[in-house]
Length: 89
Image 1 (cartoon, rainbow, N blue to C red):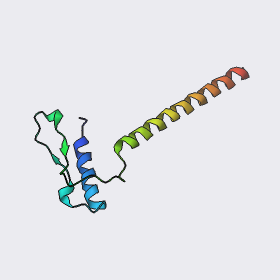
Image 2 (cartoon, rainbow, N blue to C red):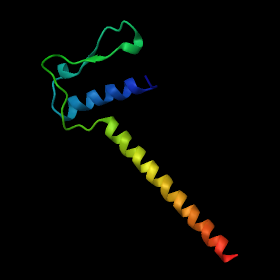
Image 3 (cartoon, rainbow, N blue to C red):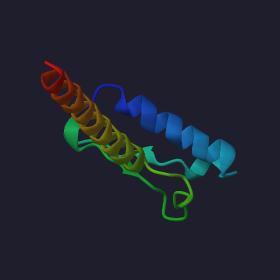
Image 4 (tube, helix red, strand yellow):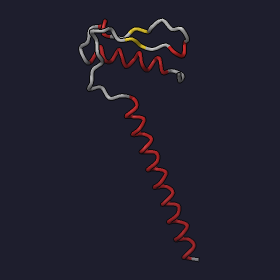
């Protein structure tokens, strides 16, 4: 588990309750962990998370694609500058 991910998950569940008009009972509770790494959130049987809230994975994937495209653009720009400089000499 990464540092601070529990705080982010707790914040996300609070936002679900606030903006999706869910009852506080809909927030999943932590299961009793046998091992701290195996601790998972358990949803009550009557509660399901809202479908319209985007997951953090989609945002992380978008950021990864953005950084790859930015790196490729910088590489092409530097290659163009080198080609221009070598032709002018």
